Image (tube, rainbow, N blue to C red; front, side, top):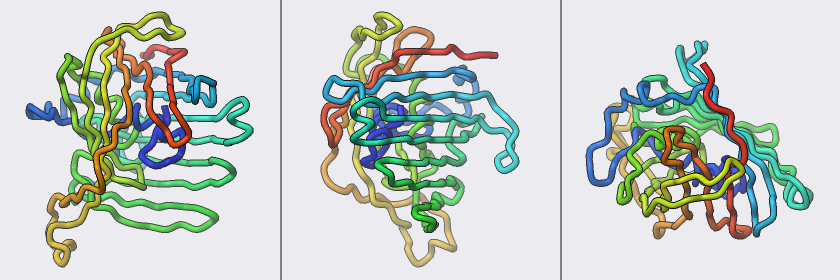
Length: 288
């Protein structure tokens, strides 16, 4: 599910999917302790494969692989997560796409340490390398395009997620009807606040058979952020102040299975090029 917070098609799907978060917060109750993520994470070795349909015709395929904790040179112990989206068929001839994502998350909190997105669409390639510094409430971005790398810094909350990590976190949450979760997501372009509301339980047909799911309606707000004391940002670390850019945008609905697998089953959203539906068609279970 590579859906993003920008306009690229593949990453428009992963957003709705892997969506927007940080140690997720319930809208009506305090969030669970972030440290309990290590106890809730049980998907190491899992692989998820999706078919993406636009206007009822298959346009792309997507895969997500979740890893086991490994030793890294930069982060110490971290959990790798990877995503891939590729256009296929007639759509691929019109809109070529080969997008990849690699995220390393903390094994204790599930929050991203770094995230790299490579977007290759219609012959235009660009890369975002994002490093999250929660202690100092900012995120550093290296954006490379046409051989040039531009570096920038964005003020972000300490619970910031990327497009993959939020989905993994949501899989172990209470999906009772009426539950509402709020995530902040940043992948190097737009800072977003995503609200997911469980609006019902239903059945969705997939290649794996009929699956009982929680149906979650997603709404996004794009945020501008700045330091609360602009002239002292190098002296004192404070959470950023937000300004909401425009009206909330309804993204669509997503489905998570209600069985012990908690599969991210699919999503339906309205994309810039029409109605988009992504649905699970193959699943490799977690491995030891």
